[in-house]
Length: 525
Image (cartoon, rainbow, N blue to C red):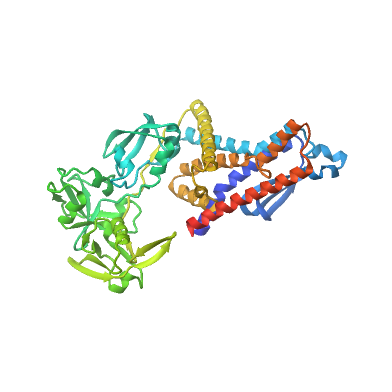
């Protein structure tokens, strides 16, 4: 797994670094500067060869790259022989040096544009924009959104991926059209795209299959139809949208946990479905409990050895039904309610082979991300719905050509706005991620959809271009700043000032890198 994730990280970051350095290389050669080394990565060279004046290399540390140009140190320019100065970076005019430096960030912006253009003209395979489990008292719920809603339009415009939502809701998401149980509904939000995403990210689309167990551990899938099963309907969606006047039908199934598709996981038995009329109940969880059923996530899939649950005799396939005399309706509520209990010992009630059994145990307390968390040592047997994918219609060449400019510019603007809020402390520095965070999102996007993977690559490419334009010495933006100061002063910056600026710039860069790595380690370890 680690080797696979590392491979995805290199596959993701490698092209970004390559095209950034290629931008510098292209303009350097265009203006006659001799390039001595073109390296992808830092540190010891793993692979190298020389062609012409340039040594090409792949180095050990895949976190960047560099182009070493002849005569690129302005502090030692006087030592360059007169006949060699025409090949030196330092002795090129201001306009030429500007474009050589600007070539790297420009290449990153061009790369993002090409990715957007390619995705638009070829069409994309994307997971549905589905909202996960929304608590009843959340802001989303108050807006009229529900668990399992599929986002289809923002302000009347079709959206297919998170970038579309962010760009369409640049100033304000006034309305949102969602798909819910086969119908399209429009809700009024009046929130900024950033506010929406802050909430949206809290609810990943991990939705439970409508699977329940009876006291004997037998499995049933819930459907609203007597003839067949609503495969697209999740339990969480049904829970929030169910009308008590609607009868439910239970289909007996056998579960194959090694299956990949829903048909492989659930083998529907030949027995007829059972009809439940639950008109006396307003909440689905209560209605099912009163009729002798519990959701699948309350089943125990595994018990950790020597854990509190193992020590008192809890077993796999037990179905948890109560905690300290109170009924529980989901594994999430079990976990949350366990944290609220102040007593050292708790009572867990389960179904086992048609009988109720009670166990008294003392939860283990662990420190997780700075908080004391109570654990009993069991894993849920919940089965979650896979993501559904949609294929977007390819755009024509002309439409894609123009749309890609807009998408690239909007991405640059959003990135600049994000850094502005970071500098003004509107957002916390803790949101900054380093290589581990990038590797995690790259791996997640790769396993979700190649379209997501390349969209993320375009976004990081823009971020890389913007960061390199920061007016910090040692970055491309710092070099551009010195060139501008030359224009203003009518000559180069003094040696002493340049040395101080480079030291300050390197310190700032190291501080930023340390902060990003610190965030990574506190987030993942």
